[in-house]
Length: 320
Image (cartoon, rainbow, N blue to C red; front, side):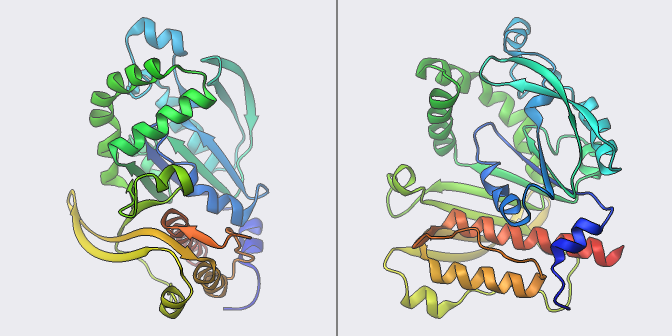
């Protein structure tokens, strides 16, 4: 590889690379794509939140007895058409859903950038959507973790009472099982999140969770692309608990590898990993976790996902 920054190659390319992230409301979808935004910046990355494609506002859903998880409460057909246009580089008039008021704001003109991230409940729901996504991710926290996050988020940011949040959770669960969870089958990678084995309270105290990254075997590989962890740094530089485990598993009809991480790692380990990704992919600078003595298992999973996504984007360029 030469020393040209691959960001420049992406900026000059006509190709719109699409990343689709599905999962329940409040499951951490934005968190696990933040690394892509941090690495490539707002000049190259744009994000669409699928909540904007609700067919009904909050009162309308109550009136019709639907939750946002029901496909009937969403304009998935419009999203499919908009995605085709965006992949072609054509701007769209995008609807805007306001979570504070539960109503729709005026639509806005949305122009695609070189990396387009779609995040929402139904991102992988239809064959038409999946056809136009280059990389797919499903975020799947354990039920109790998800409920804890949703309770805190909806009370703090959306003004809901605890009673209202718990009622919504109870109403949503059957439709989550029916409409959202089955999308895992179509994901290139799945993020599972549970409470840390080193203490449940570490989640709220330092955002420490047990994170499982399940991935399909790479169907396409590029010469000299690899990812390595510095075992010496892990063993000698950390003063906090950390565990790393790899298992094979059967996810629906496919065999996947599971990387299970828990605890916190020294910044030295992640700094070396970031440098390795820079060297291997020609994308630089990669410095997501600046000025932090320790990073969590979730941070490490985010970085590995970034490497996998960059790898997929490089393959697209080489095939082109």
